[in-house]
Length: 439
Ligand code: HOZ
Image 1 (cartoon, rainbow, N blue to C red):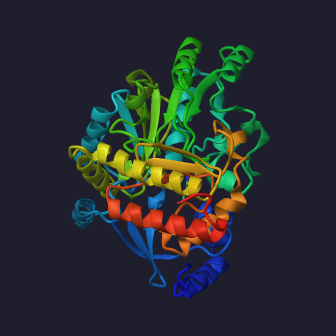
Image 2: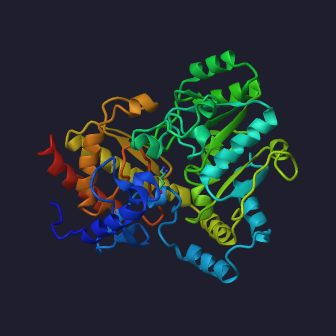
Image 3: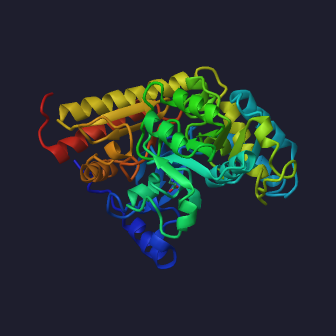
């Protein structure tokens, strides 16, 4: 039963006010609920696995700020670190020892990162990594994969995932044709297409950038051998392999996809968990490549808030908390409980679906067919997803307001939270699908 007491009057008013001044009423498009319809929920506060909206409703959160909050909302160790740092000054525009501490913590977890530079967002990280790869190789072309999202720099808004895909403009107006022409787009999981691209553009491809586990068209995982083939081909062809681990870094393992898969990319981009919920990004990798970065080398990159002391403190506290024994096993188990339960509920109510999970990332497509790339992801039933989304929202469960995003579980999601979610899912499916096909 939908909770009839759940009023969202204040969210409606807040959205109206926002729309008058802010395009679409939001500062990042997916938040606007365009893909699922209705009015976005305005948040007042959050703790652990839950947030409370401006009407006083409580939600179990599986968006978790789109990934950074692996410890849950407002974890005491991180909040205390932020407060300690803020009391000492909010920004200096001069170096601090804490930046080196965070750099060492990253390098000890991702051995491919011999040297690193901190920036303020994932977009800055990927944009800078590509510039560095171009400066290093003295080549211009880059390859990305359809449905991967690497932030909103011009070079990446071509067949992009996430909000671009959700809102139906995967290749954005405003990106000059001459810039778009420098980005070759291939299907994810298609190594033959990659081989052909290198044959067609010999010694012209500076870099291949990939979300090694794609989290921006829903969760799509690599076919066996795909990532290793990527590594081999880029090495042979002299192109820089960039793993965009903004979402997966410290999420699927201490060392991200690269340690899980045993692959050493040339450059890696990071963000999200790295800043413990504060704005941060980073790119790093082989010392030989990073030496081309200004002021050691000629490739320019800079930022007033880069290495910001509060974000750095939050990042250090978060990475240290993730060192507690058994953390990643616990995350994997609790996510397994959620996904097993979701799949069982879908089966019970006769809903065609394809579920995927890795570490504490998950996704499910409402689709019959296996999902391996953008084309198969787009075959999912987005209208059915929207119906389910709202039925769950009414029951206090907040999944991503788009079929084309991953979900995230945190250490604050305990068994009782998952079971409450699954109860809501069963109830929501009973309402939206009618009687179960079997009990
Ligand atoms: N691009 C983010 C999801 N992959 C959404 C960011 C936001 O709306 O906060």
